[in-house]
Image 1: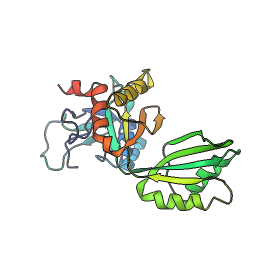
Image 2: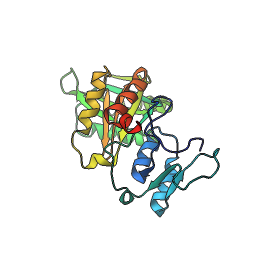
Image 3: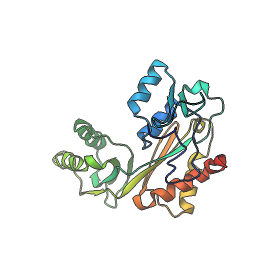
Image 4: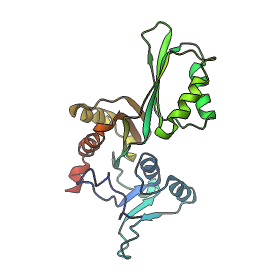
Length: 240
């Protein structure tokens, strides 16, 4: 690659970003899929499945000491697990909202089955009550390149699932924090939400896994959100 390792976030956005010496396969998979383009997810998946350690190095630097770059290893090889190892972002996402969806059993299953059949990958999903009686609003995220196909797939469902309107917005970005330490530490989400609130960044949707929290924000706040989270989890201090 053209970088000398995996960093806590994009050094072009956060000058205090530091190179990570060792990271787990699970963390690297999450970071790679969430916007950190250092490694392709498939390469990490194969290495993880075969138990092959990876070392991320720059193609433009001559071979040096064994400790150069970032080592991607099994979780068991990492003694001290950081609560948050890195902050990733992606500007390739879009938000789709179905307004006034009829509240009947199976409606969500039908909607997302149709999207799956159209080979559209959906990430965040939020359902809330509509102003109308017996109706709901369903919000989800997908890739910007899939928006037109998503709208077409949803419009094709109008005969089966009743809804008022489809609203799309590609002026959004996904910002994520990843870390093995989330498994054993409480309050990680609270730190994230408080840090964003203090900077006036509004959260539009939330997605979580065992070692990841992602939020959807307005794209103009991407860099501000990344800097705020990098500092909130002590990653700036670690670089000092």
